[in-house]
Length: 163
Image (cartoon, rainbow, N blue to C red; front, side, top):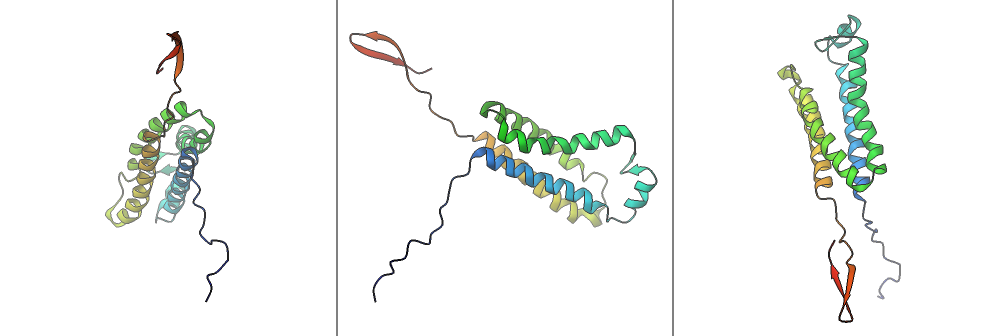
């Protein structure tokens, strides 16, 4: 029997940029963030409380709704900013926002009953894993070596220094 002459069937494993990894993680975070709020509506008594003008322990007001919108807008904007910002600003912005969203994420479980613990543990756990992944990606952002610069000529050969 002769060996097969078909081209390789191995898939190419193309590298994914740090920016794309971070944007994908923020996108996943946003889906979870929104779906947890959506599925919370299935919790008995939630719709009635909203109809009565309360969300969690808060009266529904323009200020509360603005705060909720801000909390959802920041991760949504991070998807875009992770792709659009220059590397240094991107890294710092992602570090700060991801760190700030850890307590925001954990706060979602405050006041919940044990019967709902698995729902919140899973959702918050996955959100925290995504935030940790974002932090890991930006902390380990690959660096490029700075090029050597010629600063002066000495004895016919250039002297170089690292910037």
